[in-house]
Image (cartoon, rainbow, N blue to C red; front, side, top):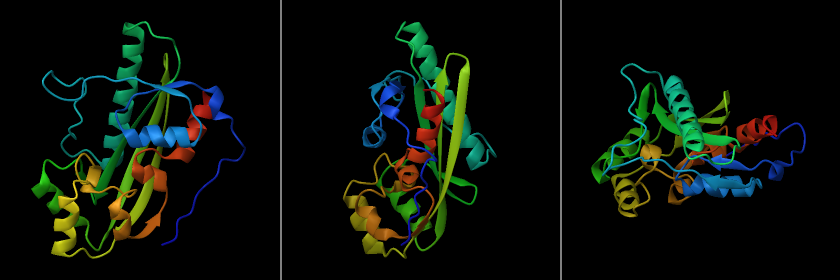
Length: 213
């Protein structure tokens, strides 16, 4: 497996840009810490018992690129409204959205073990795309970048899928796998951003935050 990492054109001191992270994802928190970005977590409702603040259901016929861009933008703008409503300190808000795609089919988080097994069987032995949009909002200003990565999984046996689903790692993961976990053993090729597959493309994130410094 060959992984190519793009580097920013210049060294950026991202520790000077304190932001709000509009995400519950522990992986996105870890990735921001990895590049030295100080942040405060800003949460809004995502699940019952109260109605979610944001509906992430794809629109009928919506292309995957348009979907991740739309959801990322809606997350960032919603988070900025929360900043204003709560009268929090004004600092950039970062939001992201990641989708695993086979053709035009978007594979979201599995509804359960059976759905996870279906997704893994679909991804087995073929290339798929992982699209990660990252956006930053500050007042009326909003900027976004998109990472598009190609990933190929080796052929997965019924036992591979059964054991991986039983591990519990498929839960709450787009496409029913976590590249930073046991599923790393399934990845035969990757062309693009490893961190983007995890959920936050760091090259694009660093460029955006440098623009808001």
